[in-house]
Image (cartoon, rainbow, N blue to C red; front, top):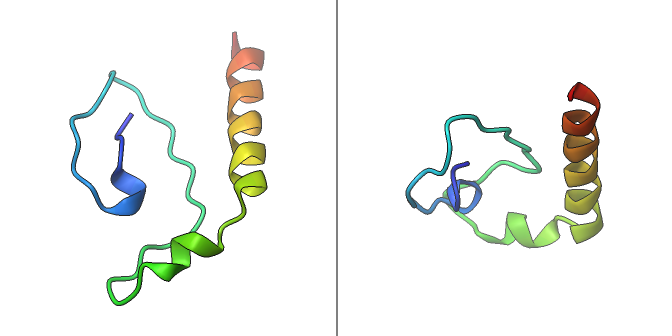
Length: 57
């Protein structure tokens, strides 16, 4: 995992494999774009990722 990558922060990576869920692009001129993403959309995307991992096992 790359913590903080979605908001432009550089934090140490965790693990050897990562799954990236992109919800919006980060624009250099404004930080407001990330505030327009609904939490329910992010949670739904996380559920799809988890379900996919469970089915792959």
